[in-house]
Image: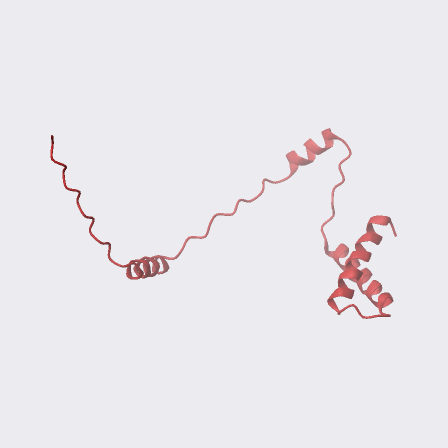
Length: 106
């Protein structure tokens, strides 16, 4: 097992140990469970591409599809009307502003 894989298993085993309330004497069980979980993730994960040089990185980047931009969801017209009606009902009527009296010219 390479050191990065061992580190991942160690971190997952620790997380399992904490999730179970830090019980004593179950470190072997936690380790085996962590190994099986990570192995399952690696079987289902898409393969990764390792890039050695900048030229390869540019070629891989050019071949990759453009990321999909998500648009903001718009509220349905009924929700918008209810929100506006609720906002209008929640605000008290505005008080009229007092006018300043003109100062006498001297």
